[in-house]
Amino acid sequence: MKLARPDVFHPLIVLAGCPQQVAGDGDDDALVAALRQRGLHARWTSWDDPEAGGADLVILRATHDYPGRLDEFLAWTTTVQNLLNPPAVVSWNVDRRYLADLAHRGVPTVPGQVYAAGERVELPRTGSVFVSPTVGTGTRCFTDRSAAAAHVAELHEAGQRVLLQPGGADPQTVLVFLGGAPSHAFTTQDGVLRQAEPDFEIWDVGAAALAAAANPAELLYARVHLIGRRVLELQLVDPSLGWRRLDAGTRDLAQRQFAVSVESALDRLGFGPLSHRGP
Image 1 (tube, rainbow, N blue to C red):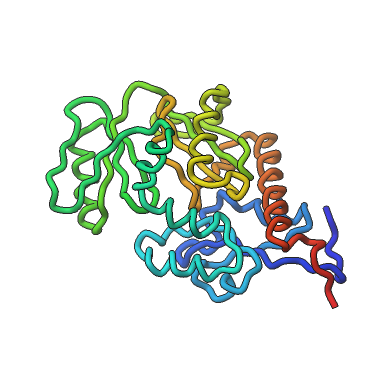
Image 2 (tube, rainbow, N blue to C red; image 1 turned 180 degrees about the horizontal axis):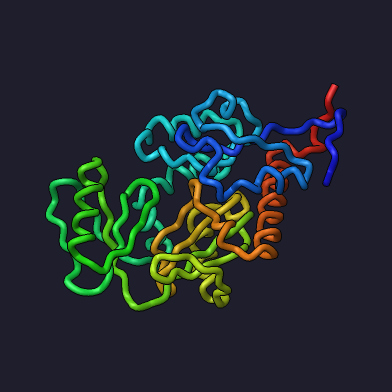
């Protein structure tokens, strides 16, 4: 472990949660230690805590209440000194309209239809359907039409617009990128994530989605959910990285990659551990 030196500036890093989960849901519990292995010091704080606003770097990890506080949240992202992922990426990614942008930029995506409250919703007569709010995460797959309709009604009751996307027989894959590079992946079986090793063509689709969204080098993390070789969802705000679903060896390597990516971002932003000397 690198030891802290009193004559070296150590940037204040905040892992941002929300009032309901200031320190996240437990999946990221090892990140503070992983960062410390690189000589980086981080602490958990709710995103709306003044301490977060004064940090040298804020990393969004559990800001799960932003859909209900969207205007406030997006305004706050522009006041943070340095934010990962960057504010422009966050504001683009909070609404599923980004899928149309990806498709326009040549990324194969799963088509969908958006329904506002009060609109007549047309569910597929057969096969599965993915139901998600247009703002935030929470995509769910249904094979039962009545259950899907009930969930749509629940989202509409909460004031959410709803996106419906068809399922199908193609396998589901979840890709995780760290620092713009492939890290680890999962397949979904009956709604459960299981560690996997997708072929390079799957990773290429994910990489294309990142490149269409932003400069991949500026993204600390990304989570891409695919059906076959089509993007169902791209999460760039505060995606779950699935640490607890990895075997110990893969998890250690991936968390080291996360910490190295944070270190690289600090260097790029001028806040590397050796960039400033103390008094």
